Amino acid sequence: MPTQRQLAEQIINQAMFARQHDDAAEFDDCLRLLITGPGGAAGLQVVNRALLTYLLREVEQAWRHGWQPAELVRVARREHAARHGRLMIDVIAAQMRGYAAATVDPRWQSQLTSLDATVWWEHDDHYPAVWGERQCLDRSAVIAIMIDICYLLATLPPIEQVGPVPGTARPTRATPSADLDQRVLDRVRALLAKAESTDFPEEAEAFTAKAQELMARHRIDHALLIAATGEREQPNTRRVGIDNPYEAPKTLLLQVVAEANSCRAVWSKRFGFSSVVGFPADLESTELLFTSLLVQATRAMTQAKPSTDRYGRNTTRSFRQSFLTAYASRIGERLEAAAGGVDQELAESAQAAQFLPVLAARDDAVRDVFDQQFPELTQQTTTINNRAGWASGRAAADQASLHGRASVTPR
Image (cartoon, helix red, strand yellow):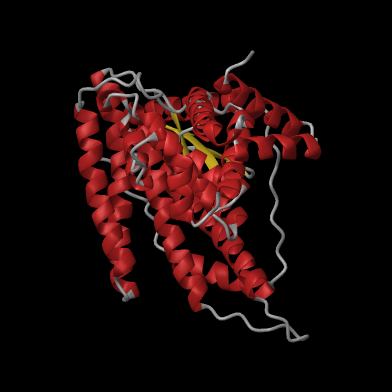
């Protein structure tokens, strides 16, 4: 005869099977048993432990399938609701208790801090009850949300691994190139923070122009330093979250920025992120530039006032969709033109024979890794249905400050 724990585990597995096969009646029966507990009130804590154990196991499996903390929370919110995201954060916090801090990658640690992923409850057996109290939910609603997360985790597809999973990271010694990256990027962040906080366009332009120059020089300096020291550097993958609304034109903006920084990007619409492939310093530059341009675009977009159409209907959404698409398109043109000027300048410089082969080899390496990770891609298109938004977006892009591949003389 199965124990209460075994019975609870069987019910959870049956619920997953019923959910997968759209058997609503069987699923409702399983849900009812989990809410009341097998064997009555004495089985409630047994169910609690079984559900949390299932969730912890599936989160660990998600790590091994390439998922990171912020991505799991994002997909929980997108597929369900904000409460599902909050529960996912708690499950992640509980799972991370098993790993020493020194064996967790710093980027993971940063995500956990941003999520405020902490174990705030005292006993795992009581977690569903105390979480329900926090969320003002009864047990039936809590168990339903936990089952939602169980099924979501169990059905997530594997994605590209972009860093060591918890428990496998090892401390790394800072290299001269890493120290250089950090110093430059800290200066760039400070400049961009000033540019995005000022109300004076000329001042913002000056700050972002300086950041642009720093990043352009840095890319060349970094590539030459890596080549001179003989370090073995390979392209990495970084996933950048893209939030609604207007996520399609935002992904277009990220794509053109990535290409300007010798990176490649592809959007995963269902999960709300773009995967960007490039060398570490270029990935950092891409994310900084994308964030800054998105801030500028959003500010310009909200200042532009759409009007109603001839039928009196509000056109705000179509205006802003078209605005951001036009903005991204025009930014791409500006970046492409700037890149052409830089390429010409580099080709004519006295150091061309030294650094052009280095940069070309890095571009080839990024393309090879990208093609290997994403051999089959579906072209994404965006519809433009607001002429005023398109015109306004292109005008705003002409005023935007770029800090990608600027025209500079390499040192």
